Image 1 (cartoon, one colour):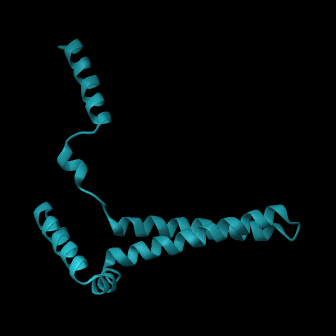
Image 2 (cartoon, one colour):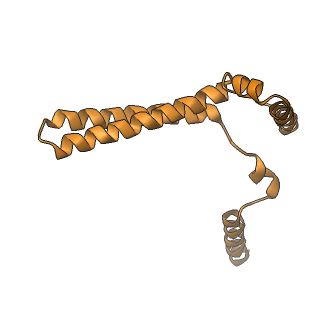
Image 3 (tube, one colour):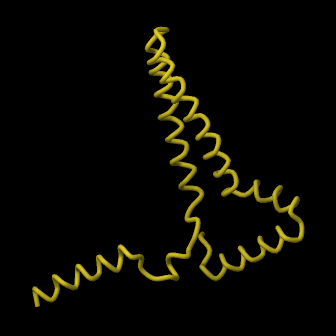
Length: 121
């Protein structure tokens, strides 16, 4: 069950205070959270993606075999799948946009919508 905005702010404040008082303990506990684990998976999968890219290019450039290039492509696809799954576990990074109001694009879209409503009415 997700936390409310107020509860999330309180939790963030507790985490900041803990990090300020005992940085070593904060680092060791932050890695054990589901978010920390997901971030590690994204980092590892990014490295695997780069390795797959290198394999694919090596398979294309050298005349060893085209199977090496295909293997590199498959490794890249698997890494992208892992990154997508882990990024879903990370969730939203910031709730700042909710509190600031609509973005520039949102305001422009609203003006565009109102323009057509005036013409219809």
